[in-house]
Amino acid sequence: MFENAVKEKNVLSNSAFPPEQADIHIAFGISADFTYPVGVLITSILENNRDLKIAFHIFIDGSIALEENKKFMALLFSYNTSITIYGIDNSIFTGLDDREFTIAAYYRFVIPYQLKNITSRCLYLDADIICLNSLDSFSNIAFAGTAACVVEDFELDKNNQPILTVANTGYFNSGMIYIDVQQWLHQQISEKCIALLREVNEHPERKKVYGYAFQCFDQDALNVILKDKAIHLAPSYNFLCNITQTSHIPNKPAIMHSKGM
Image (cartoon, rainbow, N blue to C red):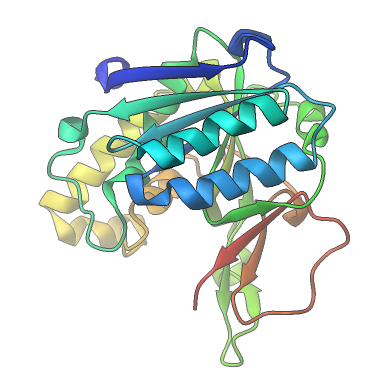
């Protein structure tokens, strides 16, 4: 199913290096109207990681506008990078809930299958992120047989200040997932998540069994399937910042991730 989800693929390269030779692979799942913020995110990553060869993979639900495509091409000649664009066939997600988020939220389940022949690790990022420092520390992470590394999410208290989720139970945010590709495939994380999402869509009463409202569809499913099976990283790897929050930012986070109220 996931191997055949891509209907077209466009590799943008200035021949600096083929994607297979990258130091780090970074992937995004977006709808077509999110090309601008992804471009900003990519630029911030490149600006803070000039010593790394980075291959970017954009999974998208439609064609990229000509002007946006030109901007991506311009990045190739300003930085040592490659960008591959994957057009997704949304039919594999038919019937899944997309009331709160676009169907692109499910594209992260496709990514490991499309990258399995070119990398053993992949960093997935949401588009509402900015890179503030080097990502080199990701290369030092040991997965130790796990499929993913994540960072805990937060809720807001009555003063709109971030707190860890209920009872600090380890509920994580799916906007940054550092993936061990082969372990992800071996453990069938994508298949299990999609099956779970279809189950609670068809039988809403089952949500109580898993303890989540499934308002954050992919995120709730990942938290069920990866419970006690993922490595939890320091907040600096995905610093979640409320849009009203202007303080309490840790020293030099690698990633700043906006989170609405």
